[in-house]
Length: 256
Image 1 (tube, rainbow, N blue to C red):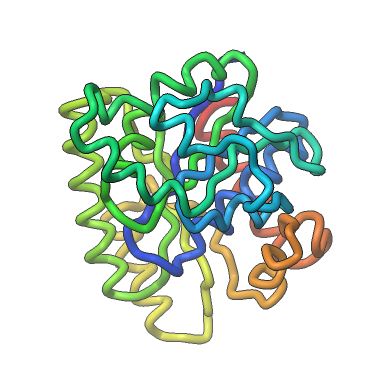
Image 2: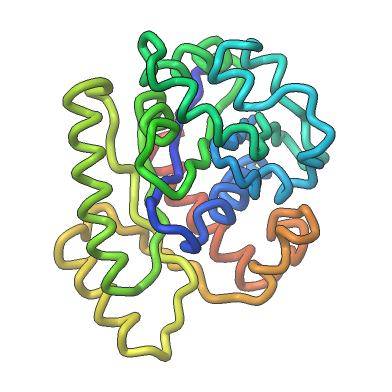
């Protein structure tokens, strides 16, 4: 195995980024692939979203980024099939400042998780809602980026800014970085705005836009509070079906 490394990134908060990272990871793991989630968000929502207590961690992404621990020692097996996580908590917020003057500061995560690539089919990185140094580390380490976004006009502006950052990282640090896809989340088909923004995305990013949209769903929102991916919380609901379809699209795009 040599893992595909994919970052879920968007500098806007509240777009379903962590939720999508969790559910895509769990969905691909259910297809028999061994998947590692790397939580790079100091909020640690991905960590708690797969049932890991943020207070009881021995090692975390923070320890790995500042080179205190090797990446393997920070990995925890979740209770879900084929799904592992490198957990995070609020201590990661300090890494932004500690790495400012560090040598090869943009390459820390790439160097740390490189030895793990042979152990997994896919590594999914959940980025913080910013374009700071931790997100840069994630994108430098990645083969691709998936951008979850809402059907709002401010989201279109944010997407353009994010793609400029991706272009710059590709030029300076990671020539192989590609936009894997744009994923519409919390979609409400009854709103004209949803159709208008979707039309704009199809106009400019038709080849990158996932055909599947993630619907606005109470069950999808509830699942992280119970520490479960949607595939386990509501196995046959519309949320689980939508994420299963997205996983199929991702597998095809990555030729896994």
